[in-house]
Image 1 (tube, rainbow, N blue to C red):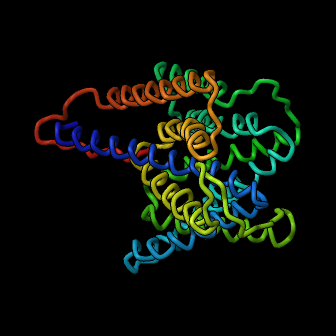
Image 2 (tube, rainbow, N blue to C red):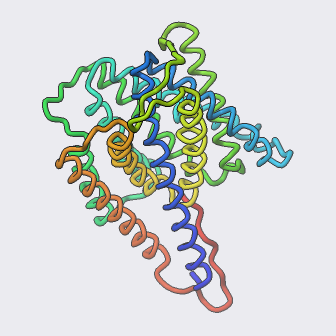
Image 3 (cartoon, one colour):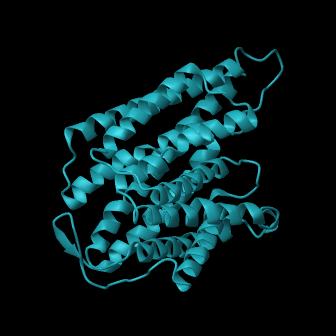
Length: 330
């Protein structure tokens, strides 16, 4: 790989890391905002439906413009868009909230956020992408930190809840794997728009047939020591925690690949603890702070392990007169 190609690769990876962190932080804001709405009578199904539907309305015009009048990528990738909306959007949301109706939030999140391990396993068994020892060490650190952040003291498992949480884990894994598809010809904005539209339609269908209870309220929401009108809270849920989060997540996946992006996504759990403290006054326990540090350390180690893997794939400079292309992410 030439010097210019290596520089371009490093710039692409730095941009991917920044986008992945932005996606994790914006996703994490949804929990505390939703908690404020729950206190005013909103059901989880109503929050999810409004969040995804508003996100679709916001992103759809940009997704259409990004196609530049060429709808062929949409037709070629119709099944991918359906899978992204069904698994990466609707199933993830619906299965998680179904899980927490049968078990505590901590264990449900732990199962859902075991998705990076599922991504690693899938890429290893399906594509032969075996993780290196440094990456495996980072996985272990991040897993230990996740357990501490979620503080599972006295947690109880329910078989039905576990099954729903595993469904959410499959949805999150599909989200990371489909984000990393760089061969579709679909701009990130168009993929996000299509996925959110499909997800909103499926969630709306679940609500219409009564499988997802929907109750809403226009009461003001108490957040960060202030009482806010409900509309800005809903707008933030749709624009930031759905629109921005999905678009940046797709752009990150295409730059980093599914495996590194899924581990950066664990920062969502750490960031959610911070926002719960900032907006809801829920002070994290020392064990959660320690867990957050371990998750951060694990993410850093995984990124270092992935960088070492890439270097081993391109051990030396290219020969005279040759230019190696920058490889597409997984």
